[in-house]
Length: 342
Image (tube, rainbow, N blue to C red):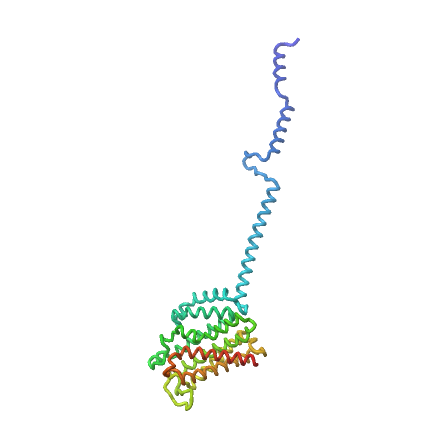
């Protein structure tokens, strides 16, 4: 016979869950938590595990970004290479490249330019330089720069002596607008024709070089003659002696210096490769000799024209700048005719 105490105890024991039931509940809870994703409240130090698909997406995005950056860098590098190639290796870079490069040179070289040119002349020289760079490239542009440097240098020779004698150039040798076009009009015309008719590029380069050969020869002969000429003569018969600085006058010292300057300039043009295909024989040395000869013919004509007409009544319009423009045009024409014949 059971006591009441035992019955009570049995009733309580049957109402409590067994250990198996508790274990099953715990397993169900763990299973549900694992399927619903990572718990927002993780124990300290436990790292959250992301799904593999998220890791792959992140890796793919990173690779795409890296590829995009690499492609942009290669594109930028290729653009710079093409631009530099257009500057240094292209025969005729065109007006866009020419204007950009010439503007940069003028921006940084303005203090030097203003020592040899007036402000308005500098602006006109920019147009001249841009046209020549567009048609004849970096090498042709270097030749114009060489002319400017050498022409400005010989103008400064014994400048104080020339100023005392009244034979120095106005503005202490600084060239004005007329001087710019008197020096470069033929070169710009050759450049414009080369851009319009590229099939005649080679022969027009010859005319371009000859025009600057002639002008440098004339400037050198005049400035050296006024500085060192012992005796100056009229360039026309009877070749009588005249004072230094007389229009059309020549001297032995000045003439030799002018011829040497034309050969130096033509030689530099040949070394730069500007005259490689200027003649049918494709001989740069022959082309350089043609330029020097054309320069001598043109300067001789300029001296005769100055002596015969310049300063005379009715010929007041025939200024130095006009005579110079005629001279360099003759040099270009002679060189082009000879170059086509050889």
